Length: 225
Image (cartoon, rainbow, N blue to C red; front, side, top):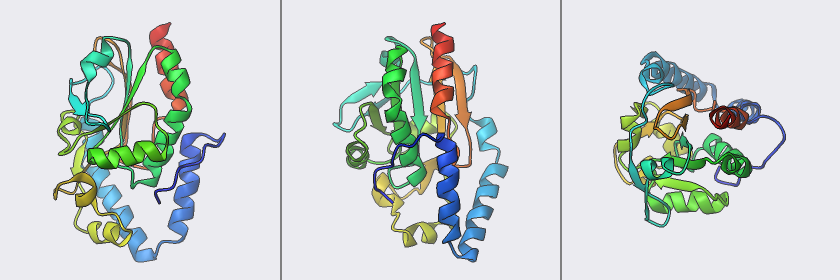
């Protein structure tokens, strides 16, 4: 589950769809039903609709990077636009695909004058492992306690029904995140203008859907143009 994600020429979400089909084909029916029910219950809460979206002001934050050095959003915005991606953690294969895809397009993102920041609730040590595993060359920050993700309206609690399933897969969220909350952010990507206005966004309770790198680049081209 934690192996580096290969880069292919298919779109990010097409690759995620393929991985999802392969994964579900090997999952017992009762587990598959539990996953589907939990996904529907999360969608029904309306969290994606309440989260920050296009036109909102992005809250400032300061979080540690993989070396423990503080990174502040406003300081990055002083230099240019920021692509901000909230992901669940390095244990999530879909997050790994997204991070690898973002790294693959990093030269183009930076070529448009933007910085890329990825944020998860995992501890700095876990973030370091994730960054090293994928040779990430952008800011990978630790939001232990989900304080920043909460400011963006993204935080939910993993239901009791899913916890033994996660643990059976070897996913120990309290160990990854350094707390007992079982809280995660729903995945979200924001393209933020220098004045902190969110100009493009993808927020989805379905963790197998992410903002395509092409859409990120299109938003950055619009800002530059």
